Each structure stands twice: as C-alpha cells, then as structure tokens.
Image (cartoon, rainbow over all chains, first blue to last red):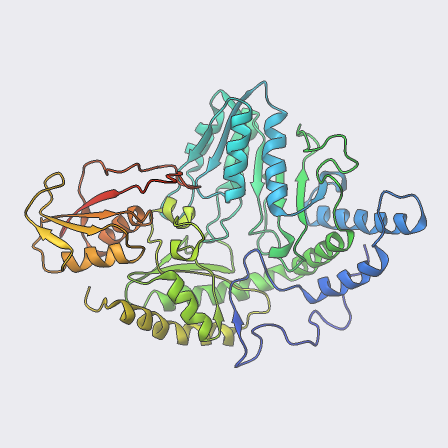
Length: 400
Length: 103
C-alpha cells in the first residue's frame, strides 16, 4: 500500500459538488458519494500501474497483484481482520449475496432457514429467499420497532431455533440511520453456532463498526471510493462456500478491477484517519436538520435520534407527493433521496419505512458527504418549508 | 367530498366510505382526511385503495391526527411480508382500511 497521507492536504483544488454558495447541493450521498480526492489520485495511479491481470507471472501482473494485496491489507487493517479474510467483489450487492448464500450452503446439514431483520437491504432479503428455497427452508423476518431497530432478544430467539442456517443483520440502516444491536445479536449467534452476515454498507467509513460479525460486506462507493467494487470479509473460523470455488477468485469469479479496489482501499484509509472529527461535524449538522424540519407543520423525522449513523437523516411530510417534492427541491438546486412509492419504479414504498410503521409518502432522505458544508445544510433548511408548501398547495390540502 | 358516500354501509359497518381506488399516494390519505374533517368523534370511515402505500400511510396518518385504526381484517390480498413486493401482477388488489375518528 502506498502512502496515503497526502502532504498537499486532504482535498483536491478542484471544486467539489455543493461546496460553494450558489452551486448545487448534493445531499443524496448514500451508496453513491463523490469520489474522495485521494481515491481519485489513487485510481489514476493504479490505472497506470495496476492495469494487468494480477494472476499473470510477469512483472506487470505482479505489480497489479501487489496493488491488490496492498488494498486487501489496508481494508483488513481498518476492519480489524486478517488480510486473507478480505476479498473484493463486483459490488456491494454481489458481496451480500455471496455472503448469505455461501454461509447458508456451508450449513446445509443444519437446515435451510435464514433469519433477517425487516429493514435489511433488498439484496439481503432476496439472497435470504434464494438460500432458503435452495435448502427447503424459510426466510424468517424479525420485526423492527418504530425507530427501525430489531429487538436483540427476539432476534436471538429466532436464530437459536433448530433449522437455522445463517442470520443477517445490518450494522446500521442506510435509509434511516438507526443502528442495530449488533454486539448482543452476534453473541447470541455465536452461542447458537449460527454465522452472522453483517451488512456494513451504510456504515463502514462513517461509523465505528464493532468486531461483531462472521461475514461482513461493505460498499466503497458509500465512503468515497469508486463504484463497481465491493468488499467482503469472511472470518477464517467461518465455513462458507464461495460462489465459484473453482475460480482463481472464488468470491469474485473472473476477478475485480485492481484500480477500483486499490482506490477503494485508499479512500477507506483516508476516511478512517479523520472519522472522529467527521462524525462530530456531521452529527451536529444532522441534529440541526432533525430539529429544524420537525418544526415544519406535519413533518415527522424518522429513525433513532441518537443511536444512529452520523450523516443520515430522513423525514416524511404529510400530504406531500414524494416525487413532486424531490423535483421541486431539484429545481431549487438540492439533490435528495426518497423512499416514497411515487419515486420508485414499483408502486411499493420503501420496505424500511413500511416495516417501521411510519409515513411513507412525502419522504426525503439525506446522507451528508464529507464535502457537505454547514452553509449547504443551512441553504437546504431555508428552502425546504417553501418547497413543501408549494407541493401541498398544488394538492389543495390546507386545513386538513 | 364527492368520493364520500354516507350511510349505505357497504363495508362492515362503516359510517362513511371513501373510494380512493385508482389514486396513488398521497391522494388516498388526502381524500380520507377531507372526508374525516368534519365528522364527529366515533365515526367509522373506511377508505378503499388500490395503492399499496395506503396500507402503511393510513395508519400513520391516523396516529398523527389522533384517530384510531378500527379492528377488523383489511380486505384485499394483503401481503404482510414487509419487503419485496407481494406480486399481484395482472390483478389489482383493493385494500380496505377503517379509521375511527377521534381515537
């Protein structure tokens, strides 16, 4: 791994999205954050140095292999894992799928049930279905409370039942920010001898991920690395069957982009270096958003107010069309996400909001990037009430 | 309040029925709120909706406005499976949700 402490400073001189007054403010960074300046630098360097097939035995191939090994070592260091336990995958969805299916398959004799939290990512829910179907089991969904958190006792009970092959629980939810009781659940899983898959896709790089997992998947695009690469860590003590055991890269058949993996690792080291400061800064900003939007009439902030990710905040506006509000804010210069059905290709609203029993329409989802400044947030907060009012006026809901 | 018909009791004892079939979120909740506006406490209002979001948003609205969900099974092929689409392809499911005004 090359030195990532850039003497010229942590930011490139190029203007970043949302960094100056009057520019667009991009607040939809969950799972797709702007490339960290050091990741950009690393990517360009690795395109020159790491383009070759890392399995070839010549100098170019060996150079690529060294970059890839260095990237694994760097990610392992951040995770508190061994280098051999860290694999790169084709992306976060592929990593989650491989983890759930691979851990389940290794425990075929134990059963076919897969225990998941209700607010897991769709990739986990689908993989749980597939694994359960393949092993004559069932997907067992553990409900969440109004904040979107599973009850640790209920999850422990569910995974200790006979016939459970694997359990999956996210570290924190990327839509509403709520952290799960991971440490308690992992203890219960260990006692039951059931491997626990942890989705750290919304948290690694932003939050301290506890050493409470057997398999862990994370998403470089979420922490300022490039898209098109994922991280999957599998503890050596855990038995799991990779998707293609015969491939030279069993967990990522065909291999991954070495430059992308290298840049992902550089970005992770960079964000780990000042995580505490960024945690405090962004937590202050999301606290401010929570307090301010709650004062807008009939707006409900959702997710745990304290035990949550530092940079994520979500709220729902009564009598508001989510699609119209996203468009209205976009016209005003603000990019936000939404879990409302009207913003999805299906008619179904976010299963996370639905499982929590909170309002699904008029939903706005914000994830602050490290490049998001206080002035960006203040401008958004100043524009929001007017945008909500305009959308409500169109629907004629005054007085309801 | 064109869509609210009083009296006729077509749905399990409801005093008022709001037909929001074919409307997408947030319109079913808005129609329900319009109908509920001047009703006395204790009135049962049923909303019919083909929008899957309504089965989450009607209870959330009721909670925000101090109403209560009335007991009784929601009709329609409801999938309580939280996640990934219950798959009613081809046929449109109708959900019937009843609110008791004023808690």
